[in-house]
Length: 284
Ligand code: MF3
Ligand code: CO
Image 1 (cartoon, rainbow, N blue to C red):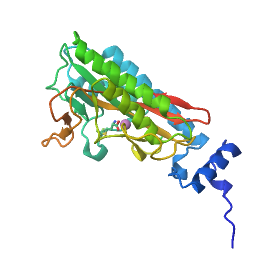
Image 2 (tube, rainbow, N blue to C red):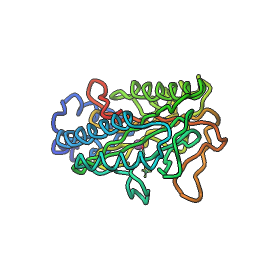
Image 3 (tube, rainbow, N blue to C red):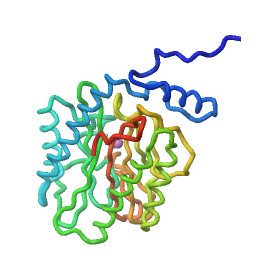
Image 4 (cartoon, rainbow, N blue to C red):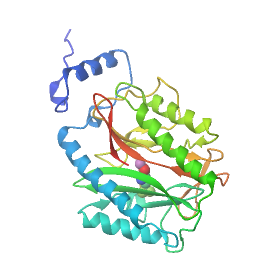
């Protein structure tokens, strides 16, 4: 019988024997492992980091320029101009037919809001601006919430707790933990605060493609799901509703996701790299 010998040519550069040994050990135990192509090489990481830097600078730029009274189409123009000025491409543009360069999601819009010249930011609004960048073929993704004018304490708390959910999820995303640990940690914090976690949308692998494996759910059970392995890059982007978790999609535009019960929704998104000792936040 031919013995299986692991093939070093598939080992991403810079991986220690310890990581290789652990992968083999977990494989024998029958754990669900990410496919090899999801473990980034140093060269890929270099490109992903550059893309992520532009994406983060873009959100900083939006933070400086977003204001009450502007239209969401104006945000779209800022995103397009900044991104192309940095020799990059806004990943959402024409992605599966999406018509704009950024998603702008206000109040009861959960995600994928389409910028429009007819929608103005009003005092009291909470708005998610979700930007994604392609640089030299490498993808990055992140979103932040912005408070417009005088925002109610209820909405402020939703935005705050959702950010905590994202950060708690990042903390749980440790090498050799499970994706279910991430979801469980987020779900616990959201529900403890009286909120619900959107089930129908999730985080995702990101870097070589916009959306790749694995799905990163923001709810779940500890100790279940795919093993988290050094070299993976994925997003954590909980969508948290003040009311029930059910959502519906706008039939006319085919994109805009609303809360079914009309309650408010918030989202914060980061992209992380799993390292041998923890993780590195690539975008926020
Ligand atoms: N940026 C979103 C995400 O976090 C995806 C938007 S897809 C688009 O995954 F087409 F609407 F841009
Ligand atoms: Co994303």
